[in-house]
Length: 85
Image (cartoon, rainbow, N blue to C red; front, side):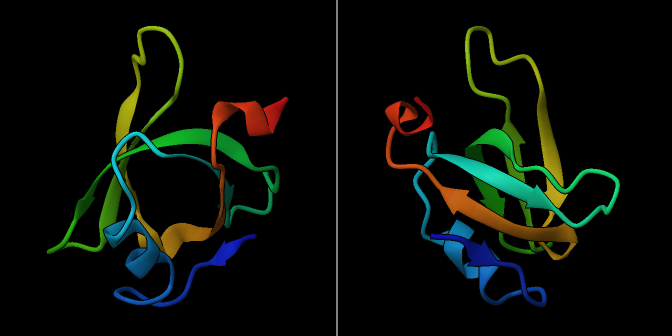
């Protein structure tokens, strides 16, 4: 099941608004140079600016960064890390 990105405040942004922190998912970037999904963990949603804070899952989780919803092509939610196996 993939969630497609639409304009700010709809579709993908709505999905993030109802997502629990710590949820893992595959993010599909819009950049043509990298069409492959990347594993991320959801941290928080910025209501005023239609962006999300994400981090790489795993030990330490060093990288935390903010992504504009409108720059995402879509996401693929994962129920558990076992889904990747």
